[in-house]
Image (cartoon, protein in one colour):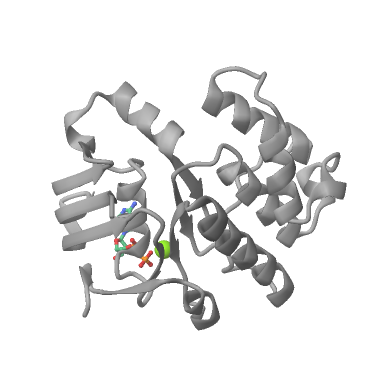
Length: 224
Ligand SMILES: Nc1ncnc2c1ncn2[C@@H]1O[C@H](COP(=O)(O)OP(=O)(O)O)[C@@H](O)[C@H]1O
Ligand SMILES: [Mg+2]
C-alpha cells in the first residue's frame, strides 16, 4: 500500500506579538492511498492547523511533511504550489466563491488554474455536478443559491480536477441533514470509485461513521 501523506513529529506555533501559541506539539501520521480519514477532537486542538500544513498552506515550525514521498520543506515555493495544485483539493468551511461569477464560471476558473489552460474536456465536470446534484444551478451566482448549494459548488470546485488527496475542513459543519448527506455520499463515491484519498475534519459522528479511520486529536497531539 502506498503512503500518500506522511508527517514526522510535526509542530506548529503561532506567534502573537511576543507570545508563542503552540497549536501542534508533535504529530506523526501516515495516510495510505485510498483511505477516507476523519479527524475529530475538541475546538482548538489543532485540527485545522494540521490540515493547512498537510495542504502546504502553512509551514511547520519543526518536523516534516511528505506528499508522495516529496518533502514539502525541501522544495521551492513554486514547486510547492505546483504540488498543491496538481495533487490536492482543499475544501474550506467558508465557501470563498467569486460572487460575480456563476457556479459554472467558478468551476471553469478552478479548472483553468489547475490545468493551466481552459481546454480541458468536461466529462469530469459533468460527473462532479451529477454527484453533487448541481446540474440545474450552473447559471446561478452565489447569492442566488442557498448556503447548502454554495457549499456544494465550493466542493465541486475543490474536486473538479480529480485531486489525489482531498482535504476538507468541516465540510458539513454549516449544512442541514439533506445537504450533509449529499456531500458525504459524494465523498464516499469519489473515495470508492476513484480511490481518492480523503481527510475530513468533522464534529459529526454520522460523518465520521462513513470513514475508514478516525484520528482523534487533543491539545495539539494525536490522542490514542
Ligand atoms: N492564525 C493564528 N494565529 C494565532 N493562533 C492561532 C491561529 N490559528 C489557530 N490558532 C490557535 O492554535 C490553536 C489550534 O487552532 P486550530 O488548528 O484552528 O484548532 P481546531 O481546528 O481544532 O479548532 C488554537 O489555540 C488557536 O487559537
Ligand atoms: Mg478548525
